[in-house]
Length: 154
Image (cartoon, rainbow, N blue to C red; front, top):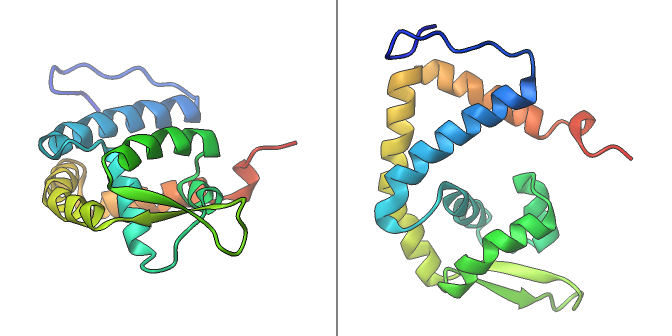
């Protein structure tokens, strides 16, 4: 399928490469749209995931697993959110070795402010790619993301 300049992109048989290229393109578009609220799409995703859990506070390990990230990468992503007081890390009273992640009132306000920008990015993608095609793509990508056969092998 030709792009706007009529160029046909090179085809690659590498699934990981194709997925990474698409992820970088989408991240750039979402990041650009979210820029007025000073959030990256990855940060919006973290805040959104925390909000969807309600009062059930995840540990760092649990959130990393849900987001399909390693704990150190998640930790790097949490630091600016904690610095900006959008989240707080609490010691788990049941197991003091664990840290629980809580979305603060300021974090909820930021998430609500960012939601309209996220919707703009989402609508832009669906208008370009197709609403049903976008839903199908999400389904396939989530099936890949949560398939244990693709998890780290020992």
